[in-house]
Image (cartoon, rainbow, N blue to C red):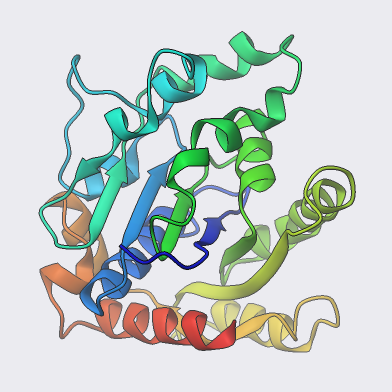
Length: 261
């Protein structure tokens, strides 16, 4: 495994359905194909990233919940699973994670739980990619405290565009008060449908908005039914159907993310 400093990238947007999980899985898949070591951390209690890598929950499996809540007795290495693909590892999630919010609410230093739990993997992977829940919750705050970069997928839809404002307020508050290393590495337009005027209009808004235009990546993720099919069979689209639009877009996105650093 690479000994250099890990790039720790959270993929986040408080709006659900914007393509967060698919983005995490497929960037991770492309990077692993190119020889980088990748750890995907599923921080969403819905466990979509876990299922998206073909892993089903079982009672004996250690998850991110176990290492956050029992960090004295459970080591992070106990929860790391090797996936079916070389260089691509996973720390799975579980619905129990939804209860972590309540369990941690009165804990001192609760925003640092993830950072402490994952301390030993920093530097062991070239990339650590974190999928986040679709809300600005304590789990998301934990992710932002640990990460050094945030990639923001923005569906080309008015609701997703309008939600960016609050997300950026949260990011800047955490950068100011908890994690000065945190940076937004880019915004990626997702679920783009060039046949609709609304998709085109929101993409134009992103390109022209003073707050976002310098962060907007060149790659646009087009709407593609193959992406949904790949999720259904528990395989990133770049492995499932490498010639599809979805796979090509994510290959371009991963390349752009690597060179943008």
